[in-house]
Length: 262
Image (spheres, rainbow, N blue to C red):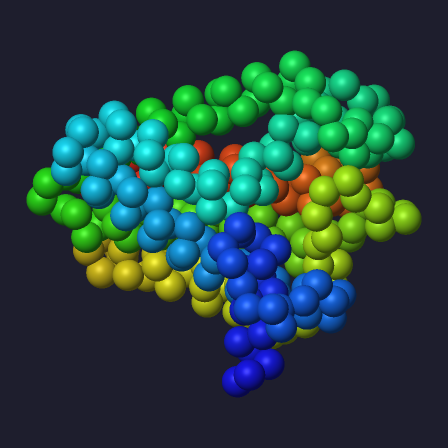
């Protein structure tokens, strides 16, 4: 149990800015094992984001509440995944060879492709969260809370699936940003799927059609894996961050469609 707690705090330390005990370290062994808790980190980010949304909505209205939820998510993770999204769009938008794409993604500067991607991504998430909140409030607050948890957990499960089925791209394992797990056992796969799917199972108590969200997310995994392998022979941490952000948007829009037409 003590070992699992240490592994969890390793995940919390790498994937968020939340203070952790001093015994949490960044060894390769614990980082690889921390993958099993990646979707569980989505529970924390989703819960904090919903808390901000709920409190701000009580006093300042829906629009500012949505913005507050997005701000809390970014502050909690330190824009961990947003950074990956920007780097991927810069790299794949400006590079035409594997070496050039990886070189651009390693650059700490952000380019036009990255800026545009971030603007559009936040616009999409703001619109989607505004829409789903309008559809559900005030009668279905519990469902909205579960959606906040689910879209964060499912997006992280979507991203980590790429590492389960592909290889790390950088031959020298260099990265300008953060370390990343490069090997997994059945414990990492099982833990990730439990953490990623449990909130969705809770949603299905209210409407089993919420399971349909898994179809577009599977398409994200398949296409992202194909695209990354085609251009850079695998994935990097930035690739997983970009996949996570895209999966958040896909999950939110899927929830809107499911709720609207069910």
